Image (cartoon, rainbow, N blue to C red; front, side):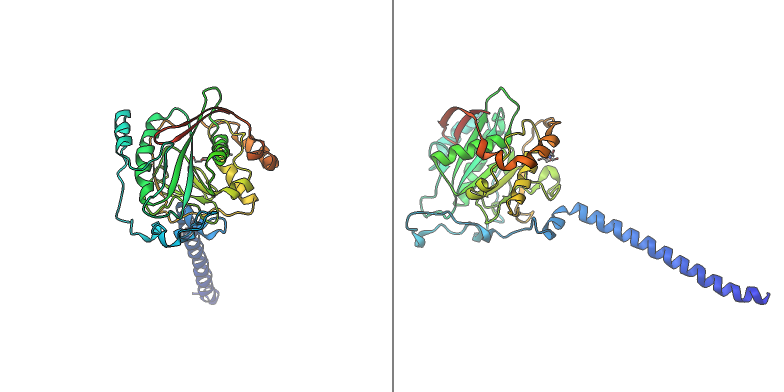
Length: 341
Ligand code: BGN
């Protein structure tokens, strides 16, 4: 071995081992990065919980109803979230026919005509109007009513179910129907808390209290069809609870989204623009079952409408709402508002 190779060999060895270390380091770093990203993308609600736009909240932040009268403070209903509901479940009957629903109406206690209920043995701290946009989903509506009129009384909440049905002419406009539901309800039975609710979503935990929180709340953040995961942070579809003055502040939903998709993302935008945060409860509490139905075809113009509405949202929504009220009816299990929009 020459002197040159004697010196060169250790130098080369050090050089290559450093290179190898670098390689090993790079590969390890890349691998860790990919693992962490994968984990985070699977756990969208984890990222959402880090962001200030959305974080899990406690049921204890529920806002009681306002009352002009003296409150009978010694006779409040037991705080629903203090009860141990965790083991209790209500069975969802996935097919309820007309006869079964009629039999249910006969047995149901204390449900006032128009689908309103209030506890009689104590004074409910929470009172909500539940608004459902609707057209031709009779089967789902029956399942919904049959479930909710058993579920909500257990939470000892005063409530009314308001179904806003759109006439046949135009494409379905979910956002506009919510606006109509809000305006019509405020005229007839005002409430400081509203829940905007799809007819196909069934809450699975009794701890998911149907009342408003200080900030708008996305209730349906863990839906079975999304594998109980939040698909993206800015989602605000399905079920949303909002205090009335917040709904007015964000100018309600956009009236411009005819057809499927976009109006809920637009509401998220409106809420953020108004300086409000969207909050969510724990995924365990926010579990929902989605009733089966044929998937609608998305409206291809929804992206353009979204763009347009970003410029004009403060002049487009509740404050420029127009519609034709076709009928108003108090049904045994719900209030029906039939409307052309
Ligand atoms: C999104 C839709 C929402 C829908 C969710 C969940 C859009 C964007 C339009 C600008 N948003 O993709 O409306 O609630 O999926 O299904 O299409």
